[in-house]
Image 1 (cartoon, rainbow, N blue to C red):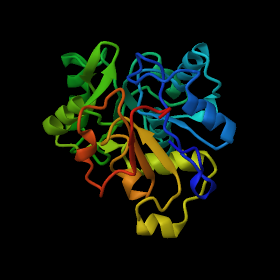
Image 2: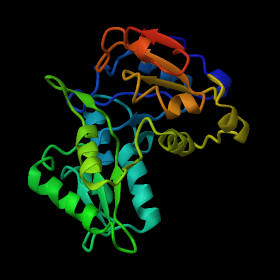
Image 3: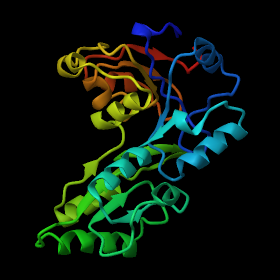
Image 4: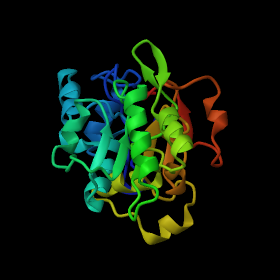
Length: 270
């Protein structure tokens, strides 16, 4: 994989440690070495929602990765920004560690929003029914509660194989309550825009309007043709590279619905 930086900008999607739903990337990986030597801007972009950004940064450092908290952009980051900007008081279906990212958010009732991330400890009848009742009972009020999905991934790469993501649970709430979820993580266009802005890069109005393939000069690398490389990544004209590790399954590249990927590689260092 070339380390040349198209138009002077790069947006490299990296991966977090095994156990966070990610393929293996070694701390001595030649791809990572080349990226660091190039001094290109990059972000570790992830839909991981079981852990806070601080925890993810610490895990990476323990594995020998030289990464700062600011170089990690998560769907929780985007979700918190949305909740804060709207002054919401959410019922949070998140794991305990992930709740750290919402410490400054008012969470006491009455709730006017439901936020759903990947939270196995929350995906049981009582908690889901509590969320359902909040949504259904507020529909007739002046300010109905909103449903926010940190992301809607169908599954993720767990330590011992693929496991269900939050998407099915979000859709269960949508079906039962009749409330459509607002999705903030990958592959939403807003997520990628926020991540690019987080690097101080301004996508021109022309690029945002034309959406031509590869027009942004920014690279997105991922192992999920839909969540990483579909939707907003294609709409923004990102250069899209698929790696055949982690969530990748045979012939995933054939499932791209946006005119074909820009490259497929055995792994990040290829």
